[in-house]
Length: 185
Image 1 (tube, rainbow, N blue to C red):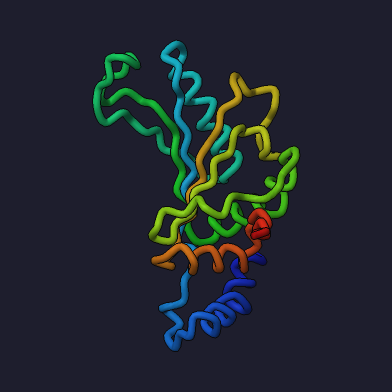
Image 2 (tube, rainbow, N blue to C red):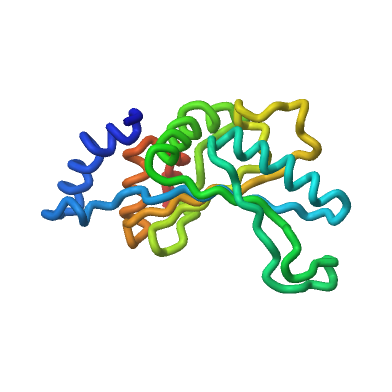
């Protein structure tokens, strides 16, 4: 069991239970899965780019990614239904907590001029999405093997059901949210 998972079980669950006035342990919000997703836009060399990005994601997550396919054809983008267009990984349990810990303690602090993650990137159901502009911020990515700098989306799926509870859960788990602006009125 890693330190974030241990922290959740020993400290965070009790704090949330008290703050949210819950009596049932199963009603306490928790992190269910983390999804990493990216897409390849250029048509030329898409297969090689997908394989390259899949290798990079496997290095970052420790799990083999799935290649996603287009659901419908879009002529303007020269895209047909079924064409491979992206790479996705879903992390659960131990690997999820390992990735979360590395993201919060190693990766995000490496970002130049990092002010914290946005507080308003919740979806209304307690899930949080974080957009990263380049895969180079992960220490596991080999700089020499990168063909092009690509961004990726990281989605944190929780059982919170509402944004306030999910925000508090992620704060207690160590997510470095940006400081709230003080209102001068």
